Length: 244
Image (cartoon, rainbow, N blue to C red; front, side, top):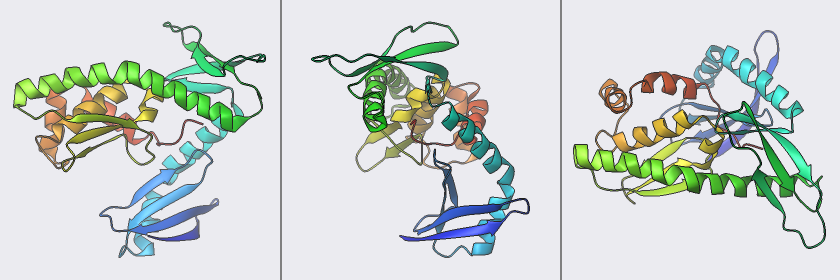
């Protein structure tokens, strides 16, 4: 992989980005939570074509960077299943176990996350506690939903069962490996609306029937999950980044 720092004049501002040359088919754009922009491109795609794509996405890039700027200023607000969670620090005392728990899980617009840690200013430790909490949420919510959809596909299409893996990913919401017979789902789906999780599950299971992203594939997804096209459109404009 070849990597270089680049900049381009967008007219109203200078756009700084990192270009990664890889053995891939398409140009991919990621915006990290810290505002850094990474473009992954095939080895032979010219710079002019890459920058043409960046100009086409200029409005979206500006929107994401603006939203992230606001989010960074609101460090005490986290996202859980698409809802905002305010953070409350619980005083730590000698002998107490450090934790992150959801205090009020209901239908209110905002929930409360309680963090108890020895050093309340240690953001690295807070991230560790938050990720541990996300994994607990993932293990509670994702396997049952995944199993229901897997049973549906097995019964309706005769597909083979696939092993479920939940892990942090920065470039995709889900993936399916024909070699290992497993489907991987992004841990960070726990931060998104549950509709994103269900769409990702159905999307990956549909790849057991069609291995492309043709119109026929998307019709298959829509047949199994009405409204899937609208969810897909929303997800395409949602950057994948670490939740902290």
